[in-house]
Image (tube, rainbow, N blue to C red; front, side, top):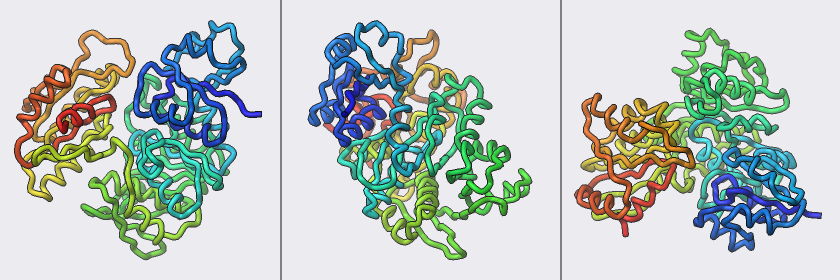
Length: 464
């Protein structure tokens, strides 16, 4: 007998992906979300009833339903119902479903959605019919973040933000990188690093792929002693650093793969032979993510030529360097980047495109995401934004956080002034802001809307 599942915050990227997976499995699904979005409309088209009021939802759904919640939902608000419900964290449901398959988990501070999408597309192109859970809208999955198929593999993006990625038991794992994020949960970086150490070495029954060109991964590597499980990927200079600076013997590891990165392509060295690979997106971070996907898929027994062929047609993820359109002669791009490392990578990629195509300016509209993150990282955001030719800021997108006195976009603007750069804070009214921006966007430029909130709406409004 199938269960009744009630997904709370069903319009969120993770929850909506789980909802699609449950529907594919012929489970009965209900949802609650205050907002109407493309995701909720898509789910309604699959006959999911979605309530706008949590009270109405709990009143109407069947008794003994399974309530699926995330760390953003307070469980105390769920205990007042007269009905008998089973509470299940979304990571617990993910583990329950994906442990039925040979599972592949991708974790890391940045790039995990992209890397998950790359591995998924490779397996789909190989007709392996994998099940997939991605925290983003993916073109090759009809803009759904989750599918359940009959193949033996299941691929999912693993969320370290609240520590629940340690509840999973994937057979294959990737760590893209480790950066200072989610310290509101971990409090100190050492606890974040320790969580990733556990993730990389929970069992002797799986393989973990690590990118050693990342500083955070180099910090945990000396503590990982399960050598027979670790696959190291990096450039020659990265392996030299491990040997000479960290005194690490690279020969003890299960496998090592060396890569070289050029402006628009990478070289992957396999058994002494160099294989060129390309991605239809600019940026070194895309080539690094692709090298991790190649390493993992080789471990699954796939052929390198067909892996590389699949990557050359990689279709991307919505809100990852997504081209929204052209306004006059300015290309308008949108990206989800909301951490200084991501902001820097995005602007760096677009600056290279500007130089390559002899464009005038790289213009950024940045919307800080969360008061806690802005308070912690405003200096780093300012330094990352310096790479742009012109900088515009929106007010902070709260993402449900309570306003913190003194924590505004002004912190970033003032830091930019100290670094000798002007920037403009817009008032957050989309009609007024975009009227102002249209006058700025004259000539051949690249304009990027950047942030994890709703900044993309400003790009679409300009194009209207």
